[in-house]
Amino acid sequence: MARWDLIGQDATVARLEATLQGGQVPHGLLLAGPRGTGKGTAARKLAARLLCHREAGQAPCGECPPCRHREAGTAPDLITLPAEGEEEIRVDPLREMVAQVQLTPQESRLRVVILDPAEAMGAHAANALLKVLEEPPGEVVFLLVSHRSDRLLPTIRSRCQLLRFRAVPAGEVEKWLEESHGLAGGDARLAARLSGGAPGRALEWARRSLVAERDAVLEGLAAARDRGGESLLEVADRWATGESAAWLPHLQAWLRDLARVTVTAGQAPPERLVNADRRERLVQEAGRFGPASAERLLRAGEALAEAEAGRVSTRLALEELLFWWRDPETMPRTPPSTS
Ligand SMILES: [Zn+2]
Image (cartoon, rainbow, N blue to C red):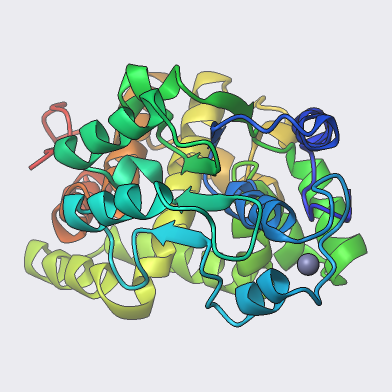
C-alpha cells in the first residue's frame, strides 16, 4: 500500500483503486473515520492522481504542469478549504469556490475541491455546498474529509460515496512504526497504544520521549494527592498551559486503564491496557477507588477528551480531576462540568 501511504486500510484502498481504474469517479467522496487514520493524506494523493495529465489509474507523473504546480502549492484546479490558517469553512470562500467550479478547468481534466475537515462548515456554507452537490458541474470532484461525519448534513452525506477509514489495531501500528520509520522500543509501543488506532498520531508521538513523559504525569498525579487545595489549583493551571498540555492523552489513558483494572479486579488482559508496562502501579492505584468508581474514572477521562478537543476549559477539567483524585471518597459523585 506504499502508493497510498496507508496502513490497516486495505479494503478502502481497494475501493479507491477500483474507482480510479474504472474511470468513473463520483462527484462527491466522503473520507470518514477517526483522526490520524490517513484520510487527509489519501485525499491529497487522490487529488494528485485526478489532476495529473496521466490516466487516473496511474501514479501521478510529477512532471506535467498540474503536478508541478500542485507541488508548488499553486495548482489552479485544486481548491482546499478551509484556507491555510483558518479553522472554519466560511460561507464567502465557499461561494467563491462554487463560482469557480462552474468554469472549465485550466490545465487538468477536472477541478478537485478538498474540504478538510468538512465538519468545519457552518449552516450557510453547508447549504451552499449541498446545492452544488445536488447539481454538480461536469468537471469537478469534491473530497470531503471528516472525523465527525455525524455532524454533516445527512443530505450532504447521501450525495457522496463513502470511503470509511478504520482505527488500526495497536499491534499493526507498532509494526508499521518499526518497519517504515525505524521507531521501536518502549516509546514506540506506548505511542501505538496511546494513539487509539491512529497511525498519524502514533508517528508524531513515537518521536518523543513518551515513556518518560508518561512517568512524569504519574509522578505529578502521585504528588497531587499530598497537596492542599490552593496548591492543587496551581498544579491544574500549570498542567493546562504550555508543554504540559501534551499530558492530556496520558491522563485520559491512565484513567481508562484504571477503570478497566477496577472493574476486572486487577485481571484486565495486558492487550486491553495502554499502560500495560505499568500494570503493577495500576493495580495498586485501583485499590484506592474500588469497582464502583469505574464510571467516574471514565467520565473524568471523557471530560479531559472534551478539553483536548477545545469544547470545555482544560483548567477546569483538570481542577475537578485533581480534587477528586486527592479525595475520591469525599467528592460528590456529580458528572464533570461541561461549561
Ligand atoms: Zn502529472
